[in-house]
Length: 418
Image (cartoon, helix red, strand yellow):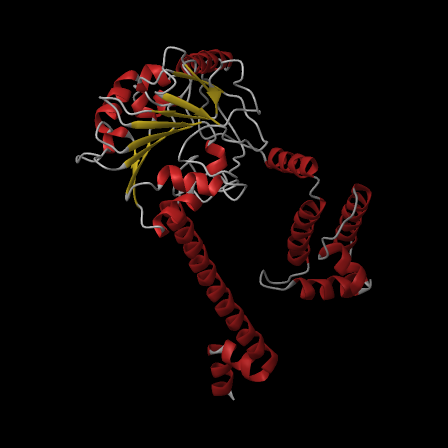
């Protein structure tokens, strides 16, 4: 008999599992749930890593810069570049003039994707590089053509969404060609002879009838120091968004596919003569550093002012005597501010149970239920009423809390008088 009792006490979990099969089922369910959570966590981590890898791979293989041959967006030129590659044209993309190939551009077509980032110095470098090229095509020209590339023409940002007719004598065009989406209207300097520069694609029929020489494309004849140059003011017509309209695609293929090699030059910020930012301070507004310094000084002064208001540190002999009533009152105020009635009632019930257990001669290890039975026997009250006063901490309002506290006090007084 004693051996069985000892075994049961030594292995309570095994006994409870054997006696209660629902407990074993609950343990199995909890273990299964933990395994499921573990697999879900690892699966989520793997999915996140796959998504990050996909995004990084996409960013490394594409670009978002306008007029970039690797940009698949609407403002890119990937569609035209892919068709040129299919036609056998070898495309070399140069991002920044510092990356220009060492070998000469002899016999190649050089595409300059915009002049906004070109300075006079970088323009001279580009002219030296393109001296032996077969032709030079300039997209998205700004009003610095004469300054950076020596082309006596001006550019005005005048757009037209309507289809334009070439109205010029050039092998670039077929009789029925129409080009849409003009961006920059080009005007040729009057000092240039008409045989040296040809203007095409005027904004409207008969636009140049009065003697002006304007259009959205200008062909400059080759000279001793530079090859044939074509200035294109309808760059958006060659982008992925509009390349399929009218004869835009055919025009782009004729402009850029006349040779077996196309060198696609994309000037960068460093080509404009400005150094790229070296640190975070280079990109922050100038007022950030003084404002930060001023804020730190103000914080230091505020710390001094607040520290002086605290006054001098006073000493007090130890040990410090703190009366129990002060602790009780302070804790009661905290409960009141937090409106934690249940915790306050639970504290009152715990103290009452300890006092009643001592008065009734119960041991310190007696359970609340044993105490309820003893108090009910001593007072003749129902166990549910005693349980409500001494064990149940549920309380909804302050009035109920006060009433239960009074009833507990009356209960203790009644047991004392027995």
